[in-house]
Length: 328
Image (cartoon, rainbow, N blue to C red):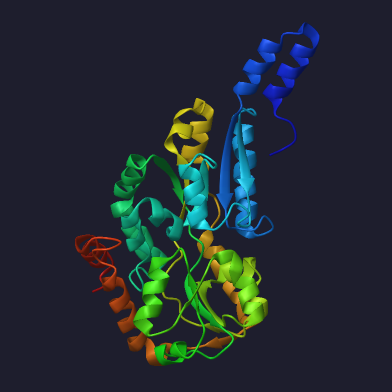
């Protein structure tokens, strides 16, 4: 946020002259402090976008609303962030489907392995099902303020991984908070190493893991690329994310704050950022073409996403999304 909170400063000045401590207290209470967590580092394109969000809210509300940001996973991995929101230690988060799914399980269909693989497909599905998901979050006590994606999913490794058989001899990271990633690795016959996201860098350093399934944006932002040697040319999905805030906090905001959240919340072109970051990584890592084993990867993805039907999302919802994107 830029400098001072205007209303609070005015209140303090008035009280220092009049000695009216009640007036000071009333003005302090008029400031809405919303505690927001994100895994994105402060010094990253996503972190910079969230900083703009913070400043924009302050300016739009004349200092009445402060977004207190916790960057870089300092508030914990996404499961921890969700727990802290539930007990009132946090008010909102900018999280991926891993965290979103902990609140509303069916949203994980958007991250079903190999189901939605392009941005146009994701747009089609969200146009069709977005209002339904928003209502589910509302019933759970949260407002889904805006969708925000973090790039296309790719395979990154210290080794050359071209086919599922290669993955079986690797040591891939299995995000503890992501049941869809774990299902994919099981379907591939790989033994994933369960870790939280903040543990990945050190695990790559020590050799505990040698492969990550993530977006170029994440691999660059968290500096994982410095410990990796190869990247897949093809992507297999999109890292879906969203900005959520507890409904009670949104309901209590002044009109200007609500309007800002409705109209000016996410201006980053995630596809452009993903494209630019991917090109930078191609200059640093060896690109592996998976086209020769495309059918094998698709079979793994099919098995993984259907293994989750009835557990994370219903079979009918999976069939509905499959029909929208024209995939079995």
